[in-house]
Length: 256
Image (cartoon, rainbow, N blue to C red):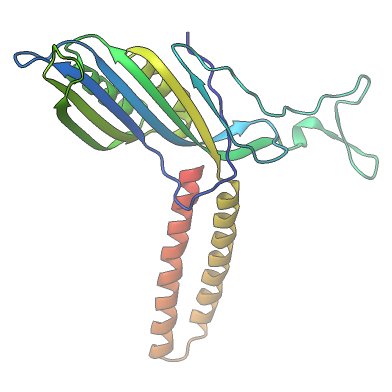
């Protein structure tokens, strides 16, 4: 059974909305064979919208040791009074059907999770491959990997293998990815945080609207250009504004 997840928000917003999963794997190895245990530490970041209305920005995290985290829920929809009509009353006294009232949604949030897992002996490579397969299954991609060997703290072992995987998955697959990572091995700890990116989201949309208005103005100016130099100058401006619009749309799509 999947453990409940907590979506926490932080008022600090960075200009870079990134999503990645870092899996750090430890596996003691004897000189002649690689057996014993490995530990996986994972960090997953994904943009997601927390459900329910939000009365303000908050910050926090949840940590669990050998178990699930306690769920925390945001403000829900306002409840109706007994006998109130099934709709919303406007200032003029008219009643609108409830299906015409926009549903309240929470702010865009960058969610981050860190898991520590312990798996069986000799399973370093197979568990590494299992994480890669999980990323592909959840529609994500691997940004980078790193594996190395270092000294072991266990006197019976000479070295310990470590590995790091950086990857990103869609926001809608955040909880499913965490649940499946938990099946890779025995969960030792779990830590989940979130960052509110509402201000960045609003800023990007405002800049997009301004760029699109400039684009329309340049198109109108192009139709009135009288000579080749004016036409080339306006077309250059249109090209720069078009590139800016595409960049802003990409950043907004990333947060969506």
